[in-house]
Figure 1 (cartoon, helix red, strand yellow):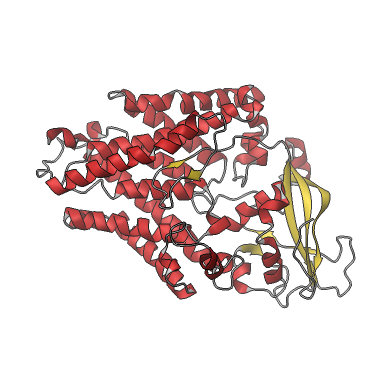
Figure 2: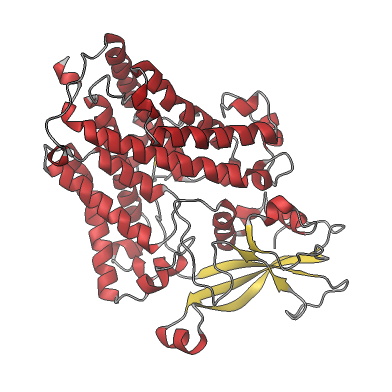
Length: 478
């Protein structure tokens, strides 16, 4: 069984496991702190209503058996504590079989959350975390050497993440092919970060170099992951550096951090280790058989993702099985040239006027609103409502299922909903009416920033949601 393990990757395994535990921790915290207003019993898209119409076979989850907000909170907070324990290294203190169960638990808990999360959990990084988390179950601990097959499968995930993203760009928006997409991307991305304004104002020739470098990293470098060392390590390190550049330029939840985590598993860290790798016990037969079986399973499930990669009609961020074991990924196949933002306002007037004097604006934590506020860094934490508000600005269809319930909760000052916001302009009593308007946002120039102190300039486009009160039907978006 000498072929089965690669002792030199013991440090890579350790680094990967601790980084993955940190991502799990952030994911469970995001779920615990936001679920009541989003998918709770009185949320905008309640879980009980969802499981009543979607069978177990399509969305396996412990919440298919029973749901309550208390049980969800126990699951999310329990998952956070479990992840913290893995981050501290508890899996290294138990037998091999117990360590595998320790890694299986957060995967099963988070799968239960994602499969009932509906629109709020429809992002590619959810499936990516589940796919990577499933493979982590079979990496083992110090009672067995790092299994070569699982290390290979982790590189296979990293390959599909990067190569899929590269292909969908080349097949998608023309600006990726003429190297001009970054003229717009930093301004129109879902949730800009504190440095995004500065990235946007980099010289245009540098933007073209960035796009070309991105194409090289996503379309060429992934193949080097399967070459001998040290080339594979250099390829993984280049991918990690590219992801860190993206982390600086915007808020993309834990997508970039999880990609970095995958890259860390492909790097040979042995030159940095103090001495030779530890002597591992002989690999148990049951463990080897299980890893081989999982490898065969993943190989079989890879058929649809590979077919999707080769298709001219490539789709991104899609799962082909309800357990989300092998998925397809991709990002920003098209780039918006104009940023539109939904601005939500309320008023206490019994007969509201249409001008802006009596209307007060709600503030969000992450998405652009106040033109003088510099965007903040939230990633890897995921602000789910803010992200969906960006999609709503692209098209009202993205908000059709949840925006009406959102407005209704603002009209009663629902505390769970208000905790998702950055500022409530009606702290003493709820507004009589709530409306939403669509604005075009653009970054200010250096001169405008100096003269006005504003990072954004905005102009009104049209009404998005008409003035609504509790006794007014609110079942449409204009």
